[in-house]
Image (cartoon, rainbow, N blue to C red; front, side, top):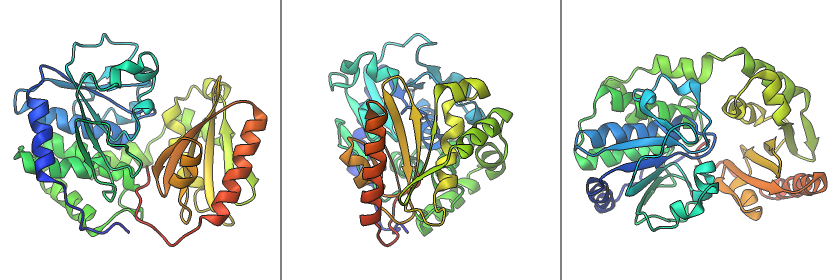
Length: 342
């Protein structure tokens, strides 16, 4: 379990505020396949910056709109890359993004967008974050980026409105699976309680993230579960673009599947492989192996219990990857660590 002793650097929080307040417009691109924490934490910052007269907006970096997050206050104002015109911005704020290459098409269409020529405020909780910002607030022991943002706003003296509290609680719930992962510390629970006291309602969050689901998700999971396979102690499945098309599903609808597979008896690592025209995007989870170290061998990263990478090539490359992960997983088991779930 994460210890409650991490402490945000108040000077760094003030530096971040200075950079953001000096901006004419702040753009907040999200990581690909954005989850609750990845969207709710920048939305909370947008609400807080508005109190200071700062214009800011999140941008769905890969153009895939997560409709299950439409309950978040301010969702209707989020821009979508490829659909909406990019505003003129002079500061970027990346929240919950350990790697600038994970910004989807916003990055791949023009990598120079994040080469540092535009100042970047980097707020994160991934241990593999490489501190790419002019200001870096990276707390790897925090259960979510939203937990970090909560502390930032306290340093700023922001009014903790109901909308901000709702966004932040959604991010915490998303990354801790409703306060159920080993990353959930007593500090996390106290923060969640404070957000409820500020007006956040857990019910809509739990419904949207864990209870309600479209039929397309059930179709997708049925296909994925039929294709579950084993390579040593690695349990994995694969989804292709045809699977998503046949079910009318979006990529975000498969994200909970890897958590479902994690902890299957006899496994050390669970993985889901998303096929594309270059190879596969891989999402990995574990209860007793450091998947961040495994992912790093393939150019990826994340948390000890939740990480991902990309593999490029044909089926022979995939087979090598699966066999290698199985070997690494068997040799990398450890006592429960302190990493978040996503």
